[in-house]
Each structure stands twice: as structure tokens, then as C-alpha cells.
Length: 260
Image (cartoon, rainbow, N blue to C red):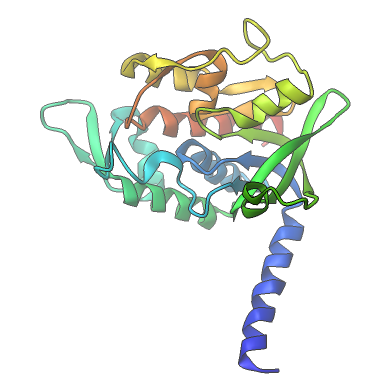
């Protein structure tokens, strides 16, 4: 066999093994933003089988660009243990006690690397077009390649079965919206539906991001800005402490559901 065939065969074989292994999971996470990556790492450390399905080519969510393409972000004291677990460096802000800056590219790449090293799998350029819904519970995802979705090609999807589905899609809460629109479920919110994100209020938004992180329907969880959108929380801009803590909180909740 030629070198070209050997290389191609190795890629196809290894990816096929990874995809087959990812079709049945303990936790399927949609969206590879910071809260999802923290959750994936923490869940994998606890021995759960977890995979992230990320629509874009590069995971990391809104982390890469920092604030308006100034690639620095801010976190609070409470989030430093999460950064330290990933080996991500940070620097105190002398005139803003309790706040710290860090390089957004290091943060994004560090969170991705940490999640993978812990044993989580990441499938990039994969879109979720539907959920699996059986016996009054969210049971998994319906996936396809992002280019297939964007080109409107008539190509049937594949399914992923998971005990828990985590919506980490950010501001749109795409998976929970699918569940409410198609399965007509009633969420654990005051109205039974998505309340919608409020305008920016940094302090309130940071606190509510963590507070709103939880299970909203059997088998369906939300973290980060997705959770804030579901419960009508405020947005908070390039401050990421609440996002990191949200990922850690939801990992603890899901691990408890799975007996870990």
C-alpha cells in the first residue's frame, strides 16, 4: 500500500473508531464554549463518557476574540481554581481588586486541551439538527455535518444516544429551543418556556449565569449563557468567571445524576 493510502486509511480508521465510540454516551454536550469545556473536563475526570459536538471548526465559543478583538478577558477570584486546574495563567488587576486578566487565546486553547487530556471527545464541524425524545425524556441528539446543514443538502443524519444532554450553545439556547418547539415540553421555568436574555448588567449576569445552571427537563441541562437565556438572566460581556463556574456546577449536578 502506498504512503498516501496508509495515511488516509489511518485517518479514516481512527475517526471511525472515535465516532462509533461516541454514538452512545453518558453526557452529550452541544457547543464547545468555556462552560461546556469545563463541564466536559470535570465529567471526564469523574469517569463519565462525554463528548462535545461543536458546529464550528474551532471550539472555544466566544473566548478567542476577547473583548472586541482585544484578546484579553477578565475573571474573578472565585474562578481562579478552575483556571489553575487547566494550567491557564492569569494576572491580577492592580486597580480592580478581585479581578484578573488572561490571554483569551491561551484560555480557549487551554480549556480545549484540558478537556481532551481528561478523556472527553470533541467532534468539530458537527451540527445538531434535532433531539432524540422518548418516554417523556430527552435521550440524545440528531447530528449532521455543518457543511451539509449550511448547504441545505438532503442528507439524512445520524443519532447519538446519551443519558444526559447539556445545552452549551450560548445565547440562542438552541437545544432547549428545539425541545420546546418540537417536543412541546414544559421547562422548569416560571412560564414553562424560554424567558429570553436581558441586556447587559455585569454583576447580576455573572451571578445569574451560575444560579441558572441546572436541569430544565428530564435529561436536558443548560450551562453558561444558554442557561441565562432560558431563565431570563442578564448578559455580562468579556467577563468569564461565571462561565467557568457554571461549567463546574453543571458537571457536579450531572455527575450526581449518574451516581459519580
